[in-house]
Length: 310
Image (tube, rainbow, N blue to C red; front, side, top):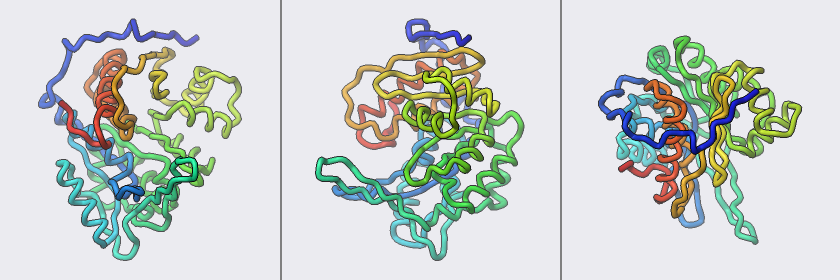
């Protein structure tokens, strides 16, 4: 039986706030795609791994992004953008032949965006260098997404680096189902690497169908994935309907904050960053959940995925 803790039971106190300087020793490795979204209005930096890494850095962690760009103008501009945010580019590789990743964004007749995630790009060929292995061995958390695993080369790199982490490390899978890159065998391999799973309500429904999970509620589906893959935690974001954290037989629910939304890009990545930093800081799930909602709401009030926190 899952015990449900509602938002009214979640502390709104900031009395236990930890200053950034108190937890700068935590190390986090973020692996995945580095790319540009080619919008009709112009190009913007995209990719969840960098968004997640940026917010972890703002919250005080020592973060590295492992990715790969092309030896081209787009790659050099991407590296410069990361440096402008204060992110280390030490583990971002440069591919001699493959181009920097891009996502084509076009609008349909009814104004809906249509995405084309181009293949055979640099982040499809991320390598596990000696430097990356050493950082993974010392990391307190490793973050990886299912999209980056669409290519066997990067999938092998993720598997190698996860295997190098210490037993106590958080292994965070951020499920990003982007058609046509949703092969069940790849999702299965990613789930077996993780001990924390983050996804949204649509993605949970979709993978429950993919794996023929019985039941028709989020609670039943979450319980099945937790028990089947030995997860410590399942984090479920539900947009305007709040968020839910499943942990040790309990479900924690928190309402979404009411804010004036500018755009929602990067809010989920900020939410995940706060959960990871909170777990590594030893905070209660209630405190983590409240603060994760707070940071996600703030990102929604700003333009772009990487606003500076107040």
